[in-house]
Amino acid sequence: MTMAFRTLLIGGRGNIGSGLRTYLPRLDPRYHILSIDLPGAPDLATEPDAQHIFIDLDIMAHPETFRSHLEGFDLIVYLARTRNYPLMRRMTDMVFQSILSLDRVPTVVASSSVHAVDDAYRFFGEGEYATLAERRFSEIKDWPQPIPATLPACPINDYGREKAHVEEWVQRMADLGHNAVAARWGGINARNTAITAERGYFAVWCHQEDAARFVHACYTAGRENRLKNGAHYFVISDNTHNIFDIATPRQEIGYEPLHNAETFYA
Image (tube, rainbow, N blue to C red):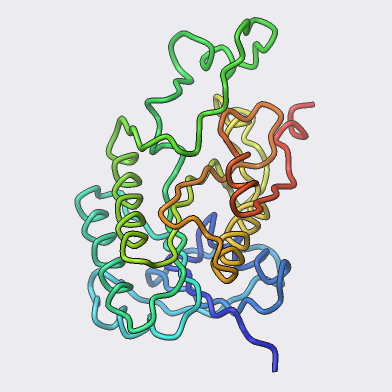
């Protein structure tokens, strides 16, 4: 009997989760995916082969019920968030504490964001990043080096601080000897198009398939005992004008993105 990759998405109906439900099983049919979502959360998956096994649950209102659903998974991907920053911190604390209470702790990929390092690049104002964001490439004399994956979080707002808090928990898990990685997601949307009207989007865009390829690379590396636990990686497509270091996850976990935002800027 073929072994299943039992996978739990905490928040699986959104932009990232709907892509994982679609593309992870295409990468390997052994992925069996369950999603926990708020009741009534809209499902953004559009492909007929996306896996549709859901538990409707407000995890903050029913933490013990949430904890009871965590047993037996090989991979947990933490995607859920709320716009209330203090509540988001409490939810992150509850999720990681619940995972760590399990008898067998699975591999965890947890959502950070490029916004965790917002202070490292500025698309507004002046300077090379602002010029790049306006696609005035010929005016850039000194092309910026890719922002390194090893750069610690340097957020400038509450959203970025949410993500930095997730990265702290990932490091804590790693320090305890567990497989855990923070995904600094780029711009992911369910239409899988670069939003050309959004300033600088071409430099941060990530196709859902590439997001799935990243998670698959993390899980595969963990199964093969070569995952660099506690790492935070940028999850960006292979964009011509990418500003982030994706060479490091290529080398360390075998992440191989396929898509390029420039196909939308003809």
